[in-house]
Image (cartoon, rainbow, N blue to C red):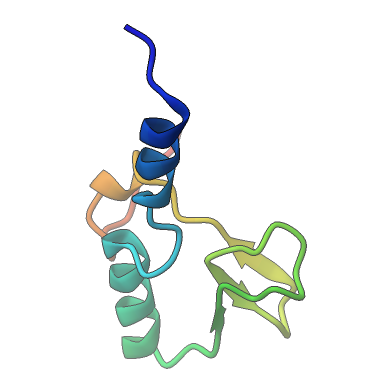
Length: 77
C-alpha cells in the first residue's frame, strides 16, 4: 500500500526537529554544570542541536543514542 502525497506531507510535518526530550535533557544538564551554549544555531553548518561557540564544538542529539541516561559515564573500549 503506497501513501499519497498528502499522507507523506502530514507525516513529515509531525517530525520534531527542535526541543525534543533528549535535547531538553541535555540542555538541562549543561545548565546545571554552568556551561555556556546555544541551541539550534543557524550560523553553523548543519544547524546542530547544541553549539559551544568558544570551543568550536557542535553536538547533534540522536534519538537512538538518547536512550542512555544523560549524566552517566559511558565506558568505551
